[in-house]
Image (cartoon, rainbow, N blue to C red; front, top):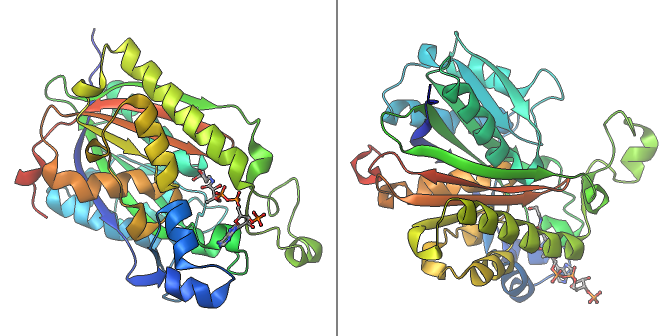
Length: 336
Ligand code: UT7
């Protein structure tokens, strides 16, 4: 028996109100709008400032909008998968907190930790649950409050990251649209280049780890940059080849937003004009697991049933990959 395909039947996003601009960062660390803009393409990022709010609260805002526009009651949700590296608490997991906050009383859930590839890996996982035939409504979330793990005295990282969340609804496809294929990778060989060193079982929290600032994101940017361009380009190429797709057949390339120069390099080597590449890094910076659903949300109105999309991401681990999906509805007909 052929498997059900898993369709995205709605997408919604949330970005906190506060805008941390390059000009404000110039007052915090030795940097300049010129350096940040030319090296990364970022102009501002959103920061969750309200005391007592965390990753789950941003996810809940995105999901509330999603439930409304897809006309879904929270009790209908069966499973929530939350891609994040900034869970509200190490445990319980954020997906459970989300389920409680939205009233998804018939759902279970779990967090998926794959850094900037979190949404791509969560989408793959959610699609398998739908394809099995057992699940009919799965929430796939990408949400990160990067401001909770960024050192605002470190100019090499604090200029990059922002907070945000996005969520999609996955349901069995009524036709042949939906998630078609994917190539996902995680090799562990680059883990020293992009890491939060302490607070896990290897280096439990201590006065020393706090003094050494090991609870903040550490990144050695250059090797990550090189590996990101190579990893995303190769997996996109491979998934296109085995599905007989040329750049002309692909309506949108939806890359993880880490650096405008990475996006351009990937698009160039694949022969995609930038008009076919979703780019919103100037507004949000790198929101880790949230970048791809935030792009889909912003472009939803333009997306048409049958459009071919290639989603691609690269992140800490290293983790990376590319997913080929055909869009399942006309975004222009969706309520805002
Ligand atoms: O999302 C997960 C995956 N992450 C990524 O894909 C990020 C990949 N890496 C990058 O995007 C880039 O490597 C960065 C944006 C992080 C850095 O850009 P770069 O062009 O690779 O710069 P660099 O690290 O080679 O640094 C060049 C210079 C250095 O000074 P010296 O040694 O040449 O004197 C840095 O100290 O720029 C300096 N620098 C800065 N200057 C002003 C580093 N950060 C800043 C800053 N403002 N914020």
